[in-house]
Image (tube, rainbow, N blue to C red; front, side, top):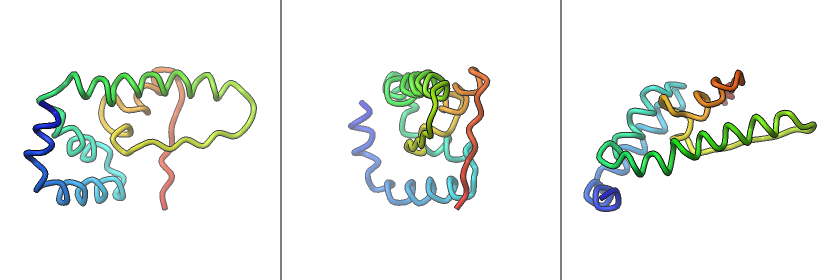
Amino acid sequence: KFLVSTLNDYDKTAANLDKMVATWSAGDPVALGETMNEGMRDTPEVAKVLLTDRNARWAEWIEARMAKPGTVFLAVGAGHLAGNDSVQAYLAKRNLTATRVTY
């Protein structure tokens, strides 16, 4: 269902990508989350596997890694940084804070 929906909306891909880049560049994770999640509204099971579950696992890994010495750099796709189930939301549940680095 998700793949079919993606193919059906292929003509909107460029506009959606431009919107995602603009909202991320503006530092607006709420708008980014709305745009990113539009394509997954009809397939919440896909969103759970691709975003929610991965974000929870990453937060667990980040917490464990931060307890060790050394420097860590993390980079994830923008879709993981927006919405109620974002990596930051899961980190906040563990009393950790993520800070957006502007460019």
